[in-house]
Every structure is written in structure tokens, then in C-alpha cells.
Image 1: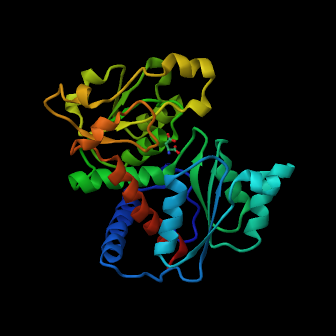
Image 2: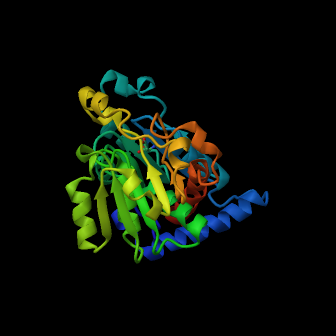
Image 3: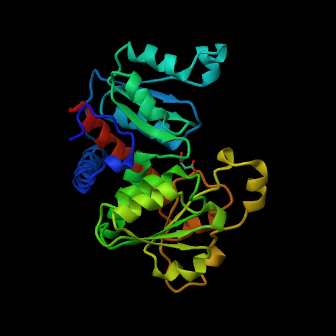
Length: 307
Ligand code: ASP
């Protein structure tokens, strides 16, 4: 599976693909944690091109490649490239692809950009986020995190909260969860930030059980997972951001009112929607989640490279 393939959308993942990657991530984790130095990707080159800011995705791909014994070359900030002279990202990628990288990871603010990059480039392309559209490898690490906590994904009740309209992790995670039997998705957001039609349509086609809520109180005690997201400030009008800022906040004081507290996940970065006093709860899983990203990305790179 996946050898030489582009990974552009979470709609590509089947349940067996996800399980394969999770098992491989677990094996690689064991080997890395036991101190083994892996040489699986020796001589291979990963190229990372982020035309939008990133901390975890970019660095965990780079760490993942290093831990597999391979090399990464990063595009660096746009200001340091010929894009500052007006060159297009397409021409930039075409040029770098001609240097023969084994794999390209790309992020761009335009929905559909990664698919376009895949048409231009000979090397396989991984979508590390294309605007509001998708972020498939984030969804892999999210599902991996749920699996590690509960030992299964089937039958889990997952609350997705916050900016469900512009947040690309929401669409990709919804698609990924749709592979698992009896999953229930609860979308919690102000009305104007409800998930996009195209996402709900796919869930309908796949017969996934989901509900829309405006208040977390209504549903929190039913949830196994509460996945909080920030407002995607960079994708909305300033007045929309000002109006919605602070419209939902998960804090320690809020959570402690409930008898049952679900595990708390967040793709990060957090801004004001998840307060730092939640970090001390055993249910806080977001830093663990970021760590899981390293191993699932190692598994994905290994699989695409066929090493
Ligand atoms: N880091 C995630 C992303 O790139 C979540 C976010 O930025 O809110 O989509």
C-alpha cells in the first residue's frame, strides 16, 4: 500500500490503511525508544515546502525523516527564495522536483494546491494542509491518538469543537473517522462556523452518525473525546474574527463542573480557546497527540518510500 503514492486527502484512507500505519507507527516507536538508530531511509531525500506557517507538521516530518536515517531539505521562508522576486510556487516546485527528491511535503493557503503540486512533480507529494480544505496527516495522528488511549476507534463518541468551517483538520478527521463502525461525531460550534456542506454530504453518503450542537454543555458528558480547535483567524474577515473571538473556551473551571470529562485533544496551536490550566488534567492529550505525529509520519514516509 501507498508505495510511491501521493497523499492528498483523507478520503484516500481505508480502514486497513489506517490500521497498517498505526501498527507500523507502534513498531517504529518501540525501536526508536529502545535506542535503535534506524537507517531505513538512508540516501533518501525529503523536501519540505511550507508556504504557510507551521511548527509541528514541518518539524515532525523533518524529525521523522532524520529518525529513519534520511535527509531533509527545506525550502525555507519565502522571503529567502526567488518567490520574493515574483516566482510562482509552481515554478519553485517544478525546479526542486528536477533535483530528484524522493518525497515532497507541501503546505499552501490555497485549497487544492497539493493536488496541483502532485500533477507538477514526479516525486510523491504529501498534503500538509491546503487552505481550509484538508490536512490528512493530522487526521492520521488524531486517530492514532484515539486508538492509543482507548485501544480502538470503533464506537467512540467524538466531539469536534470550534472553527469547523475553516478548520482543515475537521474535514480530514471526519473523513478518517468515517471508516470506523459506530463512531458518533458531535460538531459543536457557533452557528456560523458549522462544518461545510461538502463534509456533511460525505458523512451522509458514508452513513456516519453525526449531530450539530451550539453548546458544549448539551453533549460533553456523552463524549469520549473532545477535540478543540482555534478560530482560523487568517481565513476569515477581521470583523468575523472580532465577533466570534472568545465565543467558546474550554478551561479547567468549566470542565470540573462535569462528572465525566472526555479526553481533550487539540491539533495546536491553541490561542485562547483552551486554557493552560487544563494541561494538568490526566485527560489533556494534546502534547501526546503532537508526539504521536512523529511516529505516524515515520510510518507514512517509510511506506511511501517502500523502504
Ligand atoms: N496546525 C493545524 C493546521 O495547520 C491546526 C491549526 O492551525 O489550527 O491546520
